[in-house]
Length: 252
Ligand SMILES: NC(=O)c1ccc[n+]([C@@H]2O[C@H](COP(=O)([O-])OP(=O)(O)OC[C@H]3O[C@@H](n4cnc5c(N)ncnc54)[C@H](O)[C@@H]3O)[C@@H](O)[C@H]2O)c1
Image (cartoon, rainbow, N blue to C red; front, side):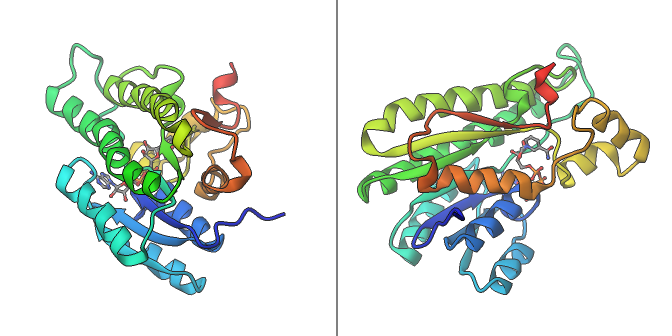
């Protein structure tokens, strides 16, 4: 049986690119009405949803800014009358070149502001709308960097470990009000995020794929399917979970 989100309204942050775009398109394909939130453009995602016959609005949002996140949720409820699901996915990769003693404070602050505070702010404003209508399902964008360390990118790793702590705490706090909170923890996914590291060089790509037991990066659609499942009733007893999608990367 296909996983369906008919009648549901879903916010996806970072919906303009990569995993967020794929998840928004997959959720629309499953029947949800979408709110596409991104600091950058979302036209391509909106067009792909329209091509499927789906419905989406776009709200330009910087997830690290309180007023913008508050307004995102307000505009969602204004447009569709409800909020059932959210994929809090907006994130930045950090500067992966320096050890802790060499790294600059600005890069640390930026990673934490967007990857961690942005996620906290998103839940802070989404949860009341969900409780008001009797429940909902939130999926946070974590990473295998929430499970293990990666050298020379402490701000990113720290932010993603914290996202898991935030996810488990929110799951505990809202379990009795029918709001489930989970996370996805992807390994290496072929998106502009990874292209910024590899610069599309075959040698640099090989350095990533050779550490993955399945020998390849994930396609964003493979993460998107997990997000839709966590949003949907099919995962009704799952909360506080970090679903690892890494081709075996963290099995070693
Ligand atoms: N690609 C990977 O290998 C990988 C692996 C594990 C986890 N992740 C996580 O998945 C998420 C999405 O990554 P991606 O690979 O799709 O990256 P991406 O760069 O393709 O997309 C990220 C999107 O987030 C948006 N964004 C950035 N800062 C924002 C802000 N302050 N407010 C709103 N939107 C903002 C960008 O404009 C962009 O559209 C990130 O949280 C990332 O940490 C990615």
